[in-house]
Length: 246
Ligand SMILES: Nc1ncnc2c1ncn2[C@@H]1O[C@H](COP(=O)(O)OP(=O)(O)OP(=O)(O)O)[C@@H](O)[C@H]1O
Image (cartoon, rainbow, N blue to C red; front, top):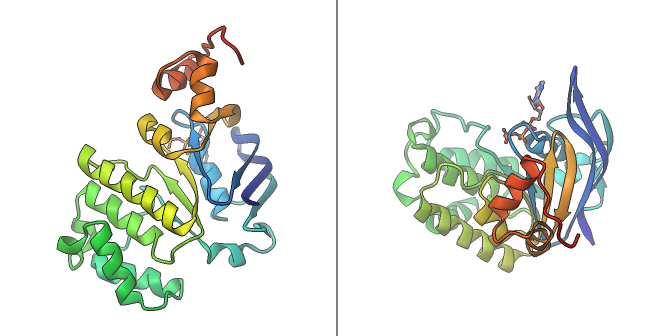
């Protein structure tokens, strides 16, 4: 079953065609990476999947619900993390998580917050105002917020941005465990190619709002004759493609 289905999706902002007729699916339990340079359309695509931005045209189905008609039924089973969304600054981390927990009607909320605080190492910062945290601490809190309702579909925009290598690795390991234990479907936008190689079953390469390539990390490496995805990314960004088997 497909958890996410995107068909002929378009978003135009006046003169900018931010998303230009893209289509992809994410199978239930799969992790798909959305890659592309700055301005490629990743954040716009995620915002449309969440119903935060209305598409110019096209169709999005999440967990069987058409997002144009029936998005609230899907939204309560989804969540997201984005560095572009600031949590209320004056509330402590715990208060923030409580607010979001109530929005999603989370049962046994204190237990859920305690579990997330333990797993994401938030113990020291739970009672500090969100506005006073470092960028890396905010990223971990945003991730905790995104998991408060144990979503079946998780949209992650740069989930490890600002994390030091050790914490980034901890978060990736934890995401792998969470996915294995929950069967959650993940769409991940990232500029970290090692992260994409490690987490994603399938990769979609966007450029100027269009899908320019897609495949498993191994397929893309073979197609471009490269050892790592960073070089594949650069080839695509710079319009180079090796004359190897497609
Ligand atoms: N509100 C807006 N009004 C006008 N243009 C916009 C708006 N939001 C995004 N754009 C444009 O749409 C295009 C896609 O932007 P988007 O933020 O989706 O890219 P991205 O792939 O997430 O980039 P990055 O890696 O830099 O975060 C860009 O050209 C951007 O300037």
